[in-house]
Length: 346
Image 1 (cartoon, rainbow, N blue to C red):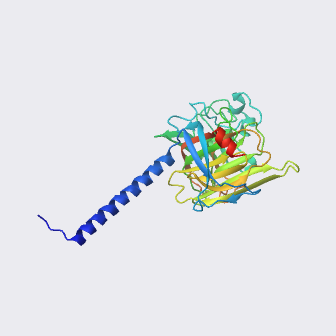
Image 2 (image 1 turned 90 degrees about the horizontal axis):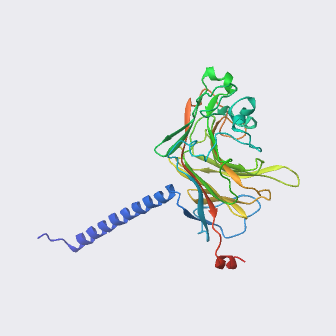
């Protein structure tokens, strides 16, 4: 029979406790990561219990506990188990203020206006397998691929032979919008993605008014391709009295955003917009007066920008091919308050 001293027994017990504690921490961390990776049917987000200021403000995720919990239920979800154009949830172009026949978007000079934003200095053209460019035959170009539940929007340099038919663009890439299938006023909108890098690389998840007006514009996540881990979250609105467009937002540093999946979201409440990274509130702004109509969601990988610093125009250092990987996109609507909650809020 082995004889163990009291001090050895205590040491052994302590070691076992530390190991157990460590395992519990790892288990809890893994559980938290699983929760973050999922888009549950019900979701609760915590926001400040105060009146939002007129201008946007940073929120400290490590600050005091946020006392107000906002309950939500899921209204839209795509975890990309199939090609995004098969589900009917997405279309590969802007529809603009007037929804035209699909033939309007599939070919001819007018289609270019719905497949890139020249004002931004973009150097790509958004394509899909049925797009004909300035020609009359589908080009069969597919910038979307799905692998093990992850969507990749792929931007690649334009083959020289295709430049004449694709408006002399430098890249072919992809965009997905829900304008013709899903829009919503109020609620929480979230993407889980990796943010690619490179000169001229400009990935984004954002929202526009479903009636085609601009602004409002809610930029939930924009990546500055030349600044690794830099994420931009911005609100754009118009001042009714002057017609001047204003914007307010912040940059956030997300370690390894190009290598790891993270959640980027915005909560649109009746009085405020709150931006989230990994479901922790990071900034907020009082809802502008002109935010009155439902918005639709957009995922795209643009190449080249004259409006967003840190992206730049494509050059010889730009990647010949780059992927914007998306694990899922989800939307939630605010739960109606119970009679007790409604009374307490008065």
